Structure formats: C-alpha cells, structure tokens
Image 1 (cartoon, rainbow, N blue to C red):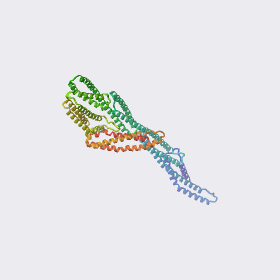
Image 2: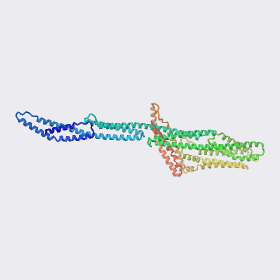
Image 3: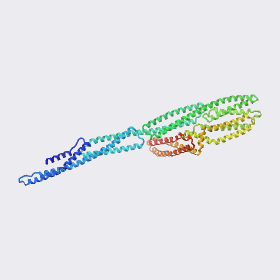
Image 4: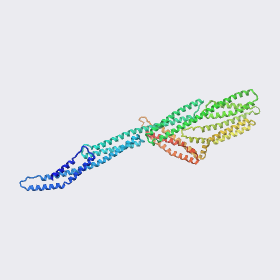
Length: 620
C-alpha cells in the first residue's frame, strides 16, 4: 500500500510540474483536465494515508514492547507521507486554480483580439475603397477609434502577461504573441491608411477651395463680358466689330475654363461623397447657366449690332439720296422763279426724311450712337426742313410764327419718338446687371414692368402731340401737304407705342392681375439678390492663406467666418419665403412665367455661396 501511495504522489508531482515548449489553448484545456483528475485522485488518498499512519503507529507501539528490538521509523515515515500528500494537494489546488484563470483570461484575450481584428479589417476595407474623409469630424472620429483600439491592444498585452505569470513561464504563450503582433500590425496599417486618407482629404479641401476661387474668377470674367456687351459702343462699325470679336474670344476662353472646372468637379466626385460636393455642384450648374446667359446675351447683342449696321447702311443710302436732291434743289431754287415743281418734289421727299428721322432716332439709342452719319443726318434733316419752309412762296408761304410752330411740332414729335425708341431699346436689350441675379423670366417681367410704369407718361406725351398737331393743322389753312405730314407723324408715333405695348402684352398682363403681390415679390427678390452679392463679396475678402506667423490675421478670420456662415444660412428663410410668394402668384394669375425654372438661379447662387463659405472655414 505504501508503494502505491508513493507512486500516486510521484505522478501528481510530475503532473503539476509539467511544462511544455508550446502552450496553446488546447494544451491548457488538456492540462487542466489532467490536473483536475490528479486532484480527484489525491483527494481519494486521504483514507488510505490515514490507514497507513494508523498501521505505522501500531507497529511502532508493538516494536517498543519487544525486548532488544531497536526503534523503527514507521511513524515518522507515515507522517512524512501525510505531509507530502498535503503539500501536493495544496499545490495541485493552486495549479488547478491558475489553469482555470488562464483559460478564462485566454478566452477574454481571444475575444478582445477578434474585436480589434474585426474593426481593423472593416476600416482597412473602407479606407481602401474610399481613400478620403468627408469632413474634419470624420478624421477626428477615426483617430479617436484608433486610440480606443490601441488601448484594447494594451489590455491584450497585459492579460497575456498575466497568463505568462500564472503559467510561470519565461515569456507569454507563442500563440498570444503571434496574435498580438498581427493585431498591432493591422492597427499600424490602419494608421498609415488614415494618414494617406487625411492627406487626400486635405488636398481635396484645398482643391475645392481652388475650384471655388476659379469659379468666382469665371463668374467675375463672365460678368465683365456681359457688362462690356451691354455698354458696347463705338464711333464706327469697324470699332464695334473689333470689340465684338475680342469679347467673342474672351467668351471662348471662359468656355474652356468652365469646361476644365467642371471636369475637375467630376474628378472630385470620384473620391468625395455627393453630400460634400452638393454646394460645389450647385455652383457648377450656376456657372453653366451664367455661360449660357452670356452666350445668349452675346447673340442678342450681335443680332442687334447687325440690325444697327443695316440701319446705318440704309441711313447712309437715304442720306446720300436726300443730300444729292437737296443740293440740286437748292441750286435750282436760286435760278427759277416758279417753285411749284420744287414744292412737289419736297413733298415727295418727305417720306425719305421720315425714314431718315426714324433710322437716326433708332441709332441714337444703339451701340452706333457715336457714329458720325447720325449727327450728319440730323443736320441734313434741318437743312431739308429749312428749304421746304423757304420755298413755300406766294400766299402759301409760311410766316415766321408758323415756321416756329412747325419746328416746335417737329421737335415734339421727334422727342416723343425718341422717348419711345429709348424705352424699346431698354426693353429689348438685356438688363444692365448691377450685380443682381437676373433670370430670363425676371428680365421679361422687368421689360413689361418698365412699359407698365411708363404707360401714363406715354399717354400724356401722345396727347400733347395730338393737341399740338391739331392746333398746327388749323393754322396751315390750305397746305394739305403739311397737314398730311403732321397727321402721318402723329399716326406713326402712336403706332410705335402700340407695337411696344403688344411686344410685352403677355407679361404685362401677368403683372397687372396682381400688381401689388408681383411688385412686392420682385422688390424682395432684388433685395435678396443684393444681400447674396454682398455676402459673396465678403467671402471673397476672407483670406485662405496667411503670412507667417499670421496669428492675428487668422484669429480675425476665424471670428468673421462663423458670422459669415450664419448670415448666409439665415438667407434660406428669405429664399423660402420668396418661393412661396412666387407659387402664390402662379396659382392666382395662372401665368406660366411664375413657374419658370430660371427663378431657381438665385437659390443656386446661394448654394454656391454656402459652398465657398464652408471651404473657407475648412481652410482656417
């Protein structure tokens, strides 16, 4: 029995002292089971060891009674066996507890490693597919996540060290070392991708800022071209055509610049989310609209210039004919006494003088108003009227008073016609943009509004012309030719006004049906346009780069930028209110012009403003 007990204790000693070169979870589980079985086996030795001790005590007692028998160490050996059993039991319990704790820690470490691995794999996949952040908040959030994962890696290392200590080994288990190395390697990989993505993001923000500045430059260039087209003038046709050619070349250059800008926006769209490019895309759409409007304006000015050139050519032809006749008539008037034929010829030439007067009046409000033939035509007409008056002769000769009345009526008629023609030119020509956001629909309404506002004045001018003409006709007695010219002049002037009214009639009615609301809407929209322009100017003045060290300048910009953004965002309510008023006008008047999509251009420019402000904010 003693030998069996000794053998059992020796096996237990070997089991709890077992050490392996490679420690894995499976090995720990097997060792835990083996030590657990050893513990059960040791626990079952208690009765046997107690029995051995009892026997040894009896033998020791019997041997003491035998004379001459020396002392035998039975009892001490039994006590030693008991002590060894108790020591092994205690060590086995401690070893079993350590193994159990190791397995528990091992499970936790593996779970922690799986969580970190899952996070790193997902982030690597995302960053590989979309190598850029969408905002500064995204950068900060991911860096915070990396810090959290690095803390998890530290916890992994500490628990692995605890397992190492519990196993009383020289280093942590190789399996955990490999797992930790892989985990830290992937975290470093994520950090490298984050640095690359952050650099891409910074480049994207810088590029967006550059694109916004280039858009602003293109807007300004297109505006300059439009202003030049609206103010186009010159002393002769060659100068006008040269200016038009130069503007055409500038417009072609802007076409190329805008095309390049839009291509750059498309490149950005491949690495940025649609949300981050929404404002920039809106600015691109507005820029395209501005290009289209400039081309349309150029075409209108070009067409108008062609008409003006035709009018000038016609004026030169008619002026030459009239001058040729007038020179000959003046020469004949000095040679003959009977001026009847000359009087008839002068009446016949009145149609030509009317045409010359109309052409000259039209050209005076055109881009050829500085042309020399226009002034020469006015002088020629005056020569004709003086000659016509001077050859009246006999009883039909006009008195000085009547000549004054004729000249006064002629001047009044020309003044009214010039006034109507000037109004027509302003109606037909594109608006002189004072920096506001003008749409094609607004331009049509503005034309109608201009005519509507001038109606009372026009009627008063026409009535004055009629009264003057009627009074003059009564004074002309038997001069039917002059009476006919007076009435013809009145009729042509009235027809000129009627034609202008008819050209704006559809939009004229749209304004008349709810004049108060339409006037309020257009006024409010002009105010909003001015506010957008003002904020755009402030955004342009906000610097993106600063001199070194530039602390004060940057601090000042950081104070201005939030207020600028708040002011820009507050315009959204104004734009919403304008849209509601326009929809109300569309419903009340049933006019399609209030539903025209070009009204959205103001909101498009506001979106571009918001994009510019945000990009400036990023750069700070």
